[in-house]
Image 1 (cartoon, rainbow, N blue to C red):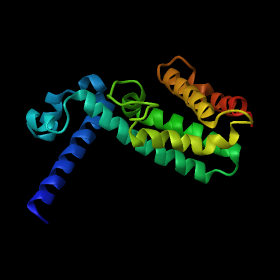
Image 2: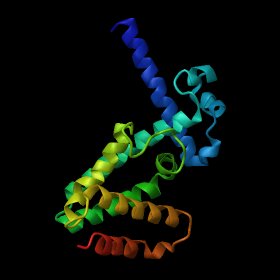
Image 3: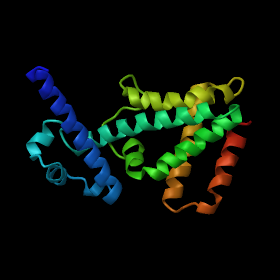
Image 4: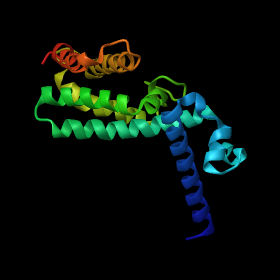
Length: 192
């Protein structure tokens, strides 16, 4: 291994460490606790080293969001492939999405609530975000219905899931009805 390859590997390792540490800290204490000073202390590097990877917290949030989108896409595809039939796939997608949001609140916030400097629904949307949307579209396109654009249907379904995830987490919806809400969403919105 050349010196240059070793340096690139070490740089990539440091970057993964920064993102993992930010994610861990955010999940434990919230995004307000994630500061460059605190991250530098936790990873045992100076702040200038941290800034050599990310210009600031916004870019770190973006990196966590991209990582989360990639994980969500894998989870959604796994759930859809394990389900038998369109209705079961849509139900599995909904449950998997809502479970991801519940299990990873800081990552979910990085993906959809906080400014990570990422473009959505644009030419320059990063691939992990496009792929997470595609993971929904792949199964939802088949149930969109005649004359309904599959992408528009997927956006609407996603918005409904996001609303359920956000309102449930905020304590605005009673948790005991979570499963009934998911079934209602699948039955009515997906018209299955």
